Image 1 (cartoon, rainbow, N blue to C red):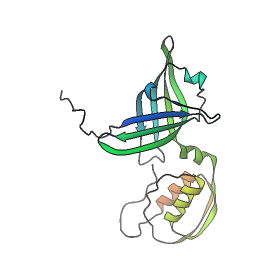
Image 2: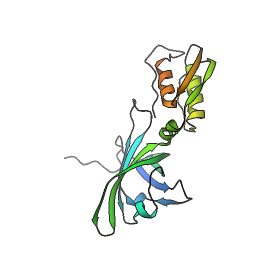
Image 3: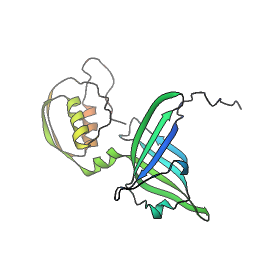
Image 4: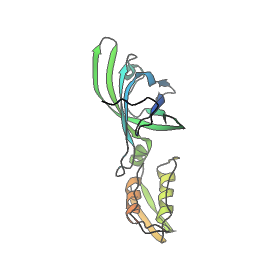
Length: 196
């Protein structure tokens, strides 16, 4: 088997600089970087948000002492080896699985993560009219106002102006509906997709 030099850039390889667990109920955070055995981040063009999971070897009993009850924030600072670009991604915990105690004073478990926008989508609904607007303008308004996201939005301008009424739909449903009806302003091409 051929070995790979440590300074070789390999697709999918990232460095985890810091992983912070933040409570939503009290003003408390803890650095769990050294507890994380593995981290998986999943992106899919057919899924509206990022998902991920982390396997932890926990000697501080965070499940009971922090406590981890769900909806805690996880802030992950990561980069790519040999490239000086760092990203901070914010997730929320939605599930803890595979809890076991292999020895005294140690708990192993898997924390499952979703982007914050997933939870904002569950909380609200879009129920208003958008007169004389392009689908790209409407999508940006929903993204900023209803999903309350400050993430970078890469959106291509669309053609045709519409009078659209969105009838109490979840923001993701509205964004996906708009994507299916969008046509690029300056080129012929494939359909639009809404994904992170």
